[in-house]
Image 1 (tube, helix red, strand yellow):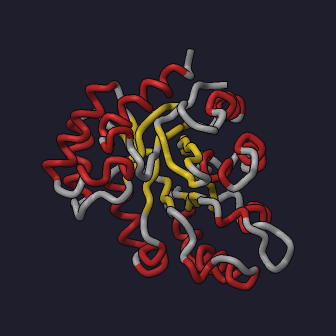
Image 2 (cartoon, rainbow, N blue to C red):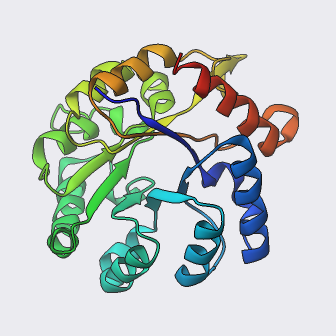
Image 3 (cartoon, rainbow, N blue to C red):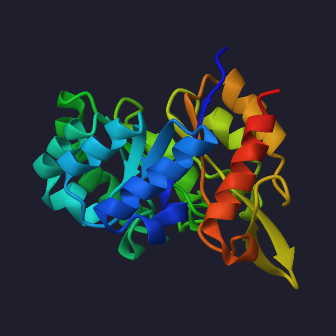
Length: 257
């Protein structure tokens, strides 16, 4: 049983990562906090070799990415090459396209598309990693939720998951239960938290919301999940994403004690 490596999903800091010099600056900031591992998502059009140069400068490693689904389908070779350059072998998708949801037929078509490029990923020792929101927990026309259908009808060797504990909880499910359902298929778990304000979901600093993150951390440790990444889409404390990262990073580190 190993402690998961903690890190930051750069989607949280996307507004500060659109140019190479800003990417450099934000990695310097994260390094000052003690961060060594990140997830790349929604950064600007920075060439992979420049990304790698800046990552190496700050001794940062990339555990997974998020890329658009059309690139998986239409630019598989380019994606593979870009990920080799940055030494990342887990390629993530932030969520299924709208047309790939809600019905068994739509989800079957989605799985078929994944299967077409998944073999090429396998040949390059790479995996496809699916990040959930809450829509995957709605019942489809076959009486199953999309998330359960994906777990049961995809190849565990190439189709992995990036479980987001806040979205799972918000959907009315138990994050720990789903971490166990995905056992052996999770390299990265997303830690996120939320509160309800007048019945509406608002994201918040880790540890200040409704999710039992300590239980999630212990489950990640028990299941030998290698990485936990903090992600917060919006609603940052004082509207300051950097401050939100600092506070949430401190909370995550406290879970190791």
